[in-house]
Picture 1 (cartoon, rainbow, N blue to C red):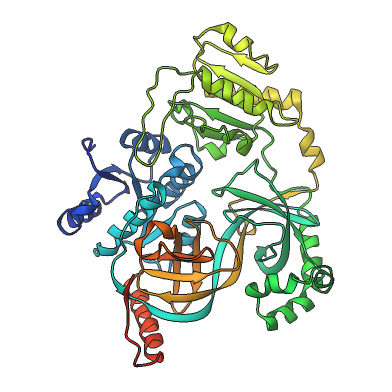
Picture 2 (picture 1 turned 60 degrees about the horizontal axis):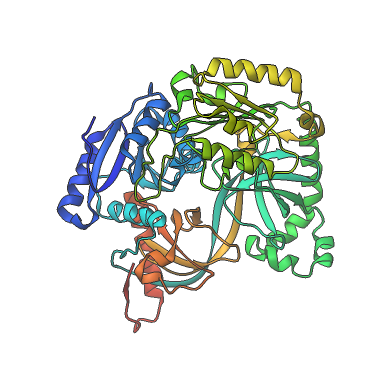
Length: 536
């Protein structure tokens, strides 16, 4: 393994460490100001996720590269999903390297749904890759950077964009979705779904924002009510048509009005035929807090293959928001007062799970109405009276270390004794298996593009778009962009509130040539007397 290094550390997971060394060598020679240093973890298809996570904690990198050009894509996807959910590593920018973007749409969808922030075609050209890493890093550090100089081409065009969401469960009247979008009650959403491999377009309005029980690689969840009668919705809300106008053309809207009764009938039949449930939600959820992540050393199979929902974090965040986010039935905390607080400039801190942490967690739980999980404290060697003072009725204190087999036995006993009344109440819900296309939906709408270059795009959007959200642009060619904080890039710091900046994912040669052709054609269509302006 490499020696400890100073500077901006780039941690590579893949089977081709030479690629990383060539990239770092290029940066040292041509972009020394980036101060990139390398450390790598050789990866193959038999790699265990625990060893990889421990490597991340060992080096505390600033950027992670996952190389999908080898034979271990499934394992890398598991790692990406874990990193995106796991605190505090979820703050790390992650880039996927893919050999060929053009014919890999299924892999790209899986990669993006796993929480990866950016996709770069794996090629021996490193100029833009250095900037992209720097740009993503600035999203977490707040550092102001300078973009590379490319000609911008004014477009003033409306372009369709697309982003993926996860559908957790279905009901007759609404569905539950997870996304990164901050929807408000006035928003109206057009969602493309694919139930039983049949494409359906449905109209939705948010009725509840749910800050708890988030299971996928997103940070927002909503119950979205179906709007089956567009005429009625228009009469009830004069702004309804305006709200959905950017998401569907007027000609398409007429078609959808005709099709909605059939879509509703097919959807409700789909829900009914999926009962009794083909895929049931795991009944017992366990939140495991452990500085040493012993569960990753003790597990005998992938975490998702256990009959219980096991959520793993090294420590609890400063506001204890991980507790309502998981809303687990059982919480385990491995007591540790000796770990030193370590971190890097991204704010990735590994804090000790000491008595103060336990008290803050119980305080957060006590503030949640109707929520009283079992709490198990492992390896507790401190003052026993300090915990009794907390007066929490479901507290179990052990002086022995965490043991996964015993925890699994406890979960089994919990299910037999406690039962799960919520499962009875929610028996009409159809939970969707995340391994199938039914659970994937696509938000489609139009944005107004102001200008484009080979690396950037500036546009306005009727929907609020969070930073680090990945969008697909339906241009000739098809492109992916990551929306970034405009204030961190000097040239865009004065952009207006509803104006967004996206960095274009590193395309292959064919796509790059198509993009240049598109930009040249649009530039030539402008007034020939207009001079081009140098910009990113």
